[in-house]
Length: 541
Image (tube, rainbow, N blue to C red):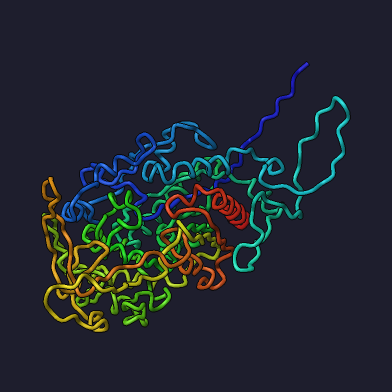
């Protein structure tokens, strides 16, 4: 008597998922392939990048982190665990996983590979989807029949919010969606990019990678016509530009955008002025604790400048307030590039010109910086209201520890008065130049006065030198003023459905996560799983 052997053949159609990381989420090397921004983990911490940049001067940062002196580094750490369609570790390398941050993304990519490929090919067995049904009980001693999913059934999805945002309901998953998804396998790729370069360059690099991925999944009996893009933060801007390139909208089945600064983020301006020290002391050691440290890299990096608020951002997000909290300045009225970023002779302008030439750096000129701002403006114009026809979005909307900067408010208060001189009026201060104030890139700007040192003696002890500042006015940037994910405010996160001309199929307002690790949040993973399932149901197979 022969035993019956059942062989399950995997789907022959590939619908690859391509993950596009956010700014600073790709590993970079110098032109000799020596890593300069490596996000591998040691003992669970990104020690390599921390050791490389902790305590580095603005000049040292400017010398190395330049778009023309760096490239993507492809040999970062790889997961040891094999899952889904991955049978050997080299496959991770071939799919680009070594190009992106291990700490920020690898757990999510492993989850995605397992979720989309590791649960078999029978959608009736996928544990995340279910419906109420009555089935006959099998006779004692007999095996229950293989479960089967039939068309035309509205499914439930575990944990999926019924309301996506603002009384906008979530479109349900249908059994037809699952039956079509079951025809595909979903190999997961990652596409790192040089985030110092313009996002246009990154978008063109993504185009090339998509075409390569489609070609390599079209071998023998396997067929592939499209990919699905899943993006994090600035990676969403890269993907939106890529989708505009000739022929690319048809090669992209759909896009999932997570925590995308759709119209920019005001915190990008703030970090150029005062650094990150009062936001996140640990991150500041790497990204830059002071305005000089951030500006040294930011001003020469078109990709970074493209995170500034665009013309689509809410107007008058920058203000200067007097000691009573009343605004003496509100900008921009309409054009943030001319009204703020290219303003050279006001202390609240984006860049203090001297900071473009740090000691021991490779200085850029004001003209170089101006060109980069104009590149950002042109990029924002190309991207405005442009979304792939099958777009899904989630954004953060938390307060408290995940609060974000909707606007930037410079608050004036009286300082420790100098011994001589007449204090200028509060309205007058808003018109002062960089030379008329004292600033060192920390979150306090002084008007008048000086830095003084005095020795304080204690009875029976030695003297202690005390340093303090006198001034007519102290100007300080207030902390977060709105909800978000700690980086992207709600107004920018929710802009796609407002601006997307009907191309945004579903947009989710979520809470409880920080910007960088948002894809490790269960709710974010759930809506991403949902979005990919809906996109697969509409893909060209």
